Amino acid sequence: MTAKRFKRMPALGACLMAAAIGWQAPLSAQAETAGAETAGAATAHAEPYVRPDVAAYLKAYYARPQPPLTREALMQIHKLPPAALAAMAQLDLPVGGVTTKDVTMPGPGGPIALRLFDTRAQRGPGPVVVFYHGGGYVLGSIDTHAGLAAEIARQLDLPVVSVEYRLAPESPWPAAPDDGEAATRWIAANGKAFGREFTGLVLSGDSAGGNLTLVTAAALRDKPAAVPVVLQIPIYPATDFSRKYPSDQAFASGYMLDAKSMASFGEHYAADPLSPRASPILGTLAGLPPTVLVTASLDPLRDQGRAYAAKLVEAGVPTAYYEGKGLIHGFATFRKAIPSAQGDTAAFLQVARAMMDAQRSPAR
Image 1 (spheres, helix red, strand yellow):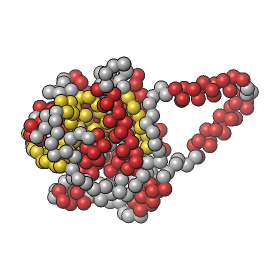
Image 2 (spheres, one colour):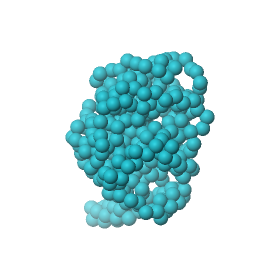
Image 3 (spheres, one colour):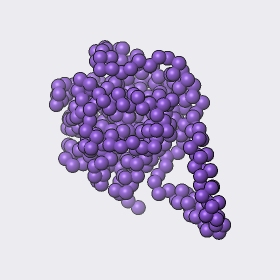
């Protein structure tokens, strides 16, 4: 799998070639209409590509009963001890050999837990990755996403600080973005609390955390933190609560993240769909940091991720787009259950590494 950049010349060349063929061999209006209808019907009924290990995972997933995520059930899950939450991450690879350090900071709604992940016990001044876990704004924690945070630290060779933001339904929107922004500002100004000196911020998160990545980046563009944001890596993010996209319908059932669960998440989160702090695609994107935006081809959120990336390009933001073909939403935290997802996770993080290196390179 390779990264895809918008306005790629091969894609443009293919479009021009198709136009040339059409000009040299025009169809009659009737034949052209019939051909379009046939092609449309074929596309509508074509089955999307699903990787073998993804198909096996989905078969096992749907073989188990899936209880509804009611308010009461979520509140009970939120009372579980860290060890029980960590056990929920059995689908992902282990943390491995990294240094960790737990820190607590004051937040807008009470103390916020933070955890440092670093492959080095000590390092000189440099950027830090601020990571926001996924879970539909109602699930997830530092512990459930420790494997991914550690992988980001390994692949980027940077310290990662994971944020334990408040969850719905106890703390509906805008508690999560409030915590995400407050934590990032505090981390930027308090590297010594982690035994580090931070010179820049890389914002990243998956799913709901991808949404918080985009919202926080916009907030820090408008009112900078103690150090600048140098890159953002939203991973299959929610970007638009205000409308439906074709992928919402195409993958409404059978691909784990389904329409029913998404509706439940939205009900508990109770965000204003027209606010850029919930739907960042509705805000102004000019001036945002360089971006590596990641989606999965079988994800209901795929098209809103594509739309956000396209809008970034239109706004002049350096943007790389990576779409995991044949993968489902959440693949970066299913790397044990879906082994091929490890290659994609490493690949998009190497794209991010290359983009950061390019920023540091002298102008030619």
